[in-house]
Length: 229
Image 1 (cartoon, rainbow, N blue to C red):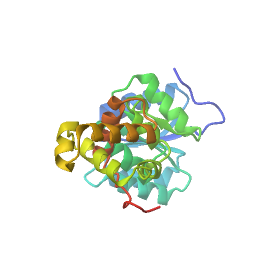
Image 2 (image 1 turned 135 degrees about the horizontal axis):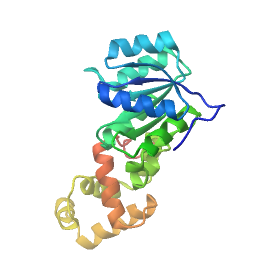
Image 3 (image 1 turned 180 degrees about the vertical axis):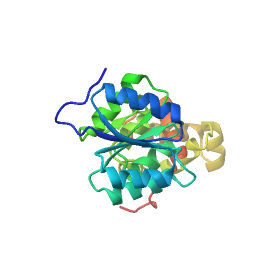
């Protein structure tokens, strides 16, 4: 079981609307060497708890409260500049991961992952590092995302205008035959453009392109206008 080293930041608050989950994670965190300063199941108390206790780490359930969790992340970081935030996700949807990281979270883990993975996430973020859930890190899209959404935009900006069109239609789930009809080009030309996209994005296969395009669409990361820097 991962443990927090003596030099790592070990003071922790747990923010989740689920009492049973807070209880279990609190017990596990303590067994791994963390000092749990408090718990909260609502947004107002969560912010007050962070201001009052000044922890080094907050484990934040992305489903906490009615307001967007991204707003709470911003409030927590504004109130405590040195705070590290680990987001706990129910749903491993790409959109939630992107939103959490853009809001300033230092890592994310799916709540259903094995105990060692959740504690490993706590230890990594507490020690000043980042953590990317095993649900995501093997997917091509998330290899880019580790460098930030701007890295994904930069990669897609390497595509020509026609390659972008083919990529966008691929992301929408269209087959090469359908794309050829939509763009009024041959299927062979579509396949050539798709091969170029695979090469420019440094993917390994058409299957990886389909996976990457699907994740990009659901992450809702915008493309820069064609021809922009």
